Image 1 (cartoon, rainbow, N blue to C red):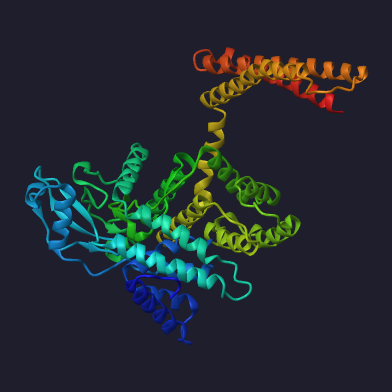
Image 2: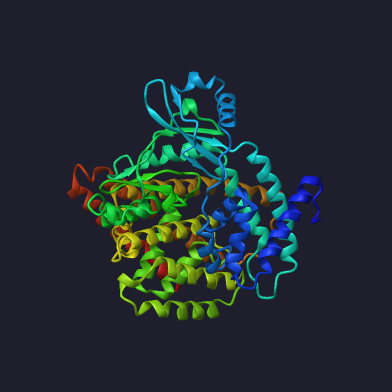
Length: 523
């Protein structure tokens, strides 16, 4: 069945198909609800698959994503004896030597792990996350079944269905492999701790490395209330929901636009609140990464959306690597214009990242465009934080919250440190170019000697080439002088600002001369 070999896989695949048929034949349920209920019945690993899928709006239509977001990652706990065996095997010590006290009843049980409260010999209270026994084999088996099922579906999907089952399973496999490695999660926590060191109101639990492995993660035990529950009447005078909303938005924007390292699943279940407005990060299994160039491009895109600049939005999408296939760009621009026109008339406070991104993703999928996975995770993280923010504060607006970060991003480009870095790079590339010239000339002369190059001599053309070569050398020399001026000005700017500014002005004048000469020669 579907190319499966082992008897266990065949039995499991039969179970999967029977559950899918059971819900598929129910006419009273919507397709998204059928999928959610089927995943819940198929057990913990399928629930986890569904949760990961809910973070990828490029893989399924919005109505499916919204339904999958309802999946609760709860599972029956495994026995304390099994938990003890895993801890002792992983840490190579008896349980009583590791912990002064270990609570036998878990405080949480999920599809991949369960958590026990414990006390270390130094009286520090910790949360011990233990991987569910045998879960790796179960995941491997279920992924194999899903892979074969995806191949079957890809050949039998209705005409017009643009989502790709094989790609979905491939990305799903990458995501879940990272989640079941607790060392990976521990590193994520440590990085968040460093990034939020000077950021008020965000708490990241301490990791106890000596008691952590790929299957056991020991961290500081932190008390708190789920962020989504702090608006309840009983917490009215305890929490400040508006401040929590603002702080959550600032935290995710900092992660995306400053750190290039962000929590990719800021679900309410993964975030706690402490009075009056401190946010605690509980889970760091799923993260996203962005490099400096991409961050700059994202900043431009958000600014373009804020400014309602259509041509700039299209340019930003192209620069972000979205438009990678041969498509009718004129038609795409027209469809994009129609999509954005419905938002351009709205006041800024009514613009929502979630709605705009859902519509953009729908349009891109219809054109079979592939969005880089890190950008999808970023969009989802912003959307989730926006949803939480609006529940806590009806006047909350993510785009407004992003404005100071965009401004800071542009200001950073023109700091003396940044200019110095770019100037050094420019100078290095220019020097490398000059160093290459003798080598290339030597190579050409060698080819002359070996009669590998034949020339039809034209004195007029030769004169033109020599003139152009001289002009090119002059420009290189001028470029080096400009670079040197920028570097020197950057170095002395803080100590002698007047001289630094004069240096920049001179560099700007010479750059203008250089640009003018290039334009003249091109006429």
